[in-house]
Structure formats: C-alpha cells, structure tokens
Image 1 (cartoon, rainbow, N blue to C red):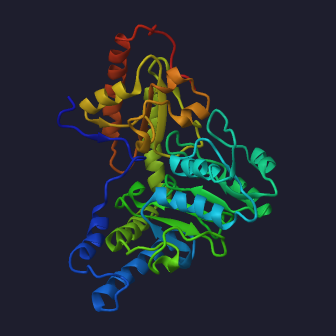
Image 2 (cartoon, rainbow, N blue to C red; image 1 turned 180 degrees about the vertical axis):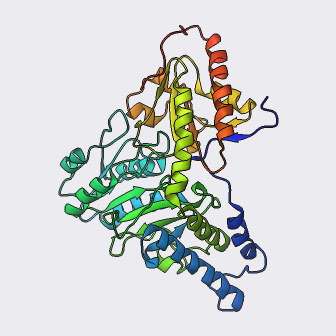
Length: 396
C-alpha cells in the first residue's frame, strides 16, 4: 500500500526547498560566483545579494539589518549566543539560566561552560513543558549574565511564555536569548514591538523551506557578545569566513515567503493537525505530549504504550510515512528523549513516542492515509508485546 506513496510528516526536522528559493539561489551557484569581499563586478553582485537578504530577514523579524548576522545554521547561532555572551560578560558574573527541554545546541554549550567555571541553573518545566516566569525571576541572581529559553519546543511543540520571560529579563537587566528555529513561519515576530525584550534570536533556513547549512543570529544593538569565528572581516568582524552567498540569498527568499499570509497558512496547518490529533486519540493506550493548545500549529507528539518508537517508525516508513521519535539531531540514540523525561513521562512510555509535524507538503488526503495506517501499525506491534492488555483510550 505504501510502495508508491510518500507522506512527509517530519517538517520539524527539515523542509523541502521551495522552487522560488531554488531559482533565487541558482545564479549564485553558476554565473554570479564572485567572492562578496572582492571589488570587481561579480563580487559586488554577491555582496549586494547578501545585503538584500539581510534586509529581508530584518523586515520579517522587525529588526534592523545591522542586527542580523549570518551563520551556518541554528546550532552555530545557539552556540554563539550562549558561549559568546558568557565569555563577553564573565567579569560581571558566571550564572546562566535555561530549561532542561532546550535543544542540545543550547544544553551542550551550557554543559561545556560548566567545565569552565560557569554555574548553570536548569529551571524545571511543568507536565506540558512550560517554564514559570515567576520561578525564573526568583532564580535570577546578582551574577546572572544570561537567560536562554526557546520560543517553541522542537519535540513536543509547546510554546514558552516568551513575552513574560523577556519582560522579567529586561527588568533585571539580564540579556535574553531565544532559540526561535521552530517559530519562524508559524507566527509573527516583532523584535521592535512585542518581542522587544529579546536580545538574541536564533533561526535556521531549512526549517522554513530554505536551504540547509545557513542560519542567522539576531543580536540586538548594544548586546555584549564575543566574536565567534576569527579570521576575515565578514559580518562586522564577528563571524569570519567567506559568505555562503547562494544559501544567504535562498534564506532571504525563504523567510519572505514564510512570513507572507502567515496567519492564514498557520490556520490551514492547524486544522489538519487537529483532525489528525482527534483520530489518533482514538487509539488505546496513548497520550499526547506537550500542551494541548499552546503548541506549534503543525506539531503532534504522542507516546504509545507497549511498543518501541523505532519499530513504529520503521513500519510507518515501509508504508510511505516519514515521521520521527523526536529531535532529528538525536536520532539513533537509545536514551529516552530528554524532553519527555523533563516533563515526567516514564521511560517505558517515552520509548514509544512518535512525532508528526505537518507543513506545506501535506494535504487532507495525507491525514486520511495516516489515520488509516497508524492504528493498524500500532495494533501489529502490540500483538507481539507480552505486556499489552487491550483497554482504555488515549489520555488527555
């Protein structure tokens, strides 16, 4: 049944590149190949493309072009924000606040900084993955130099109270970084308006139908942060290296497309997600992970008892359905998801998790197909489990 069908429901891992983005990139992969630092015409063309893309990102985020710095992706942006701020402000203190459900691109830099004498507070989150702004405020100390809380979680889709956190950080004069990799294209951001308390914001093009290997870090003017890569004078001497002109141009076009009619697009995805959710909740012994309402429009994360997530993925793949158990960056790990562990999901249930993330590649027919196939696959896997006892329905 799945031989000739492909249903892609892993948009949180990556997205396809839109044709308009490819067309924007092609000239800089062929004829306009000059180094943007060169003074001759094809070099100037590259420089112009970089600055045009910078302006597009700034417009989409409600920022100034001078506050946009290009990187190789979300991981580099997160590393730069965390480590660059820590080392730039270490004379003022060595205390950092974050949460345990962050992407490893934030958690691992924090662990690294702990080996260098920094003190990191990992604030607990509730059963939905939400951090309490009041608890965050209570954790701030005189030596706190950075707060890093993601805009929305990549595994369970929960949207954090970013405005409240930003307000707390601003009132205490603590720089605030947010990983917004999953947020772009799902709802509007305004770094000079409602999101004005954000000092640094990470984004990655391949999460919003752009190319892989290119990202950006918004750094509000006046924010203390060390240069990340040393060498040439690119990116105002803060991030050296010859620019990926084609990738940057593609990112500019991608964010332009992603932020056009964003509310209408999000509502379309949300409706498909809700229908999919309703159908999956009819499967016995399953639970929805993450907040039931305050979540990314395309995100669903379930745990199915009495089955193993990897087996579930492989059987779905045989039926032409692409999904995941959580972060694509952690695929292959046998450990339970650190996100599910942090929200209190028992290991034996967490191991049966499935993440479905919808996007532009999906149709109502895709939803129908998943609702036809998934219950059958779950039933087959449970039939060979010695622990399964048929009863109950999906929790939450």
